[in-house]
View 1 (tube, rainbow, N blue to C red):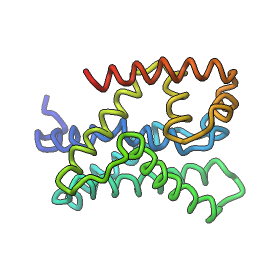
View 2 (view 1 turned 90 degrees about the horizontal axis):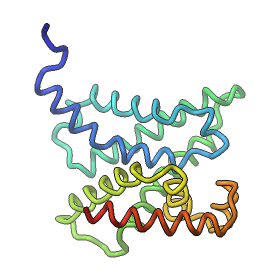
View 3 (view 1 turned 180 degrees about the vertical axis):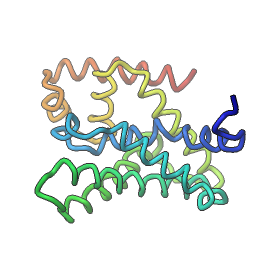
Length: 190
């Protein structure tokens, strides 16, 4: 039986699929915690990757940074569409702008989390690879540790705010952060 995907399609699909952990991290860190149970985060990421696959001809000659920018905008638009569906009262332009800003802000926090130095253009590819490795490593952490690290380190919530979000004591969150960061460092080094 013939495969529906050609080898070229499969390679393109695999190339786009490597962005999934990074897109998942961006969407997880920017959806209001109250909406998480109402919004299909993996569906938003899936829709974004499908749109990228359908737009391969437009993306083919772009740099990795340009592709990531395109994916981030598409992710923001898909997130806005999903939030619109959740809110029966309809469109809220202020919420849409804030989602786009939040995703851009999340990317900035993500970059600061990895490094505080300014990189020359030749190092941008390495930086993106490091971002994608971090996103994959975060997915390997136990859920509570991952959430603590994402909330405290990537969303820049205080220890008290993180504890409130996770409904834990500050001491419990501090322990999760300590274990999560240790394990994350080990995963990043291996």
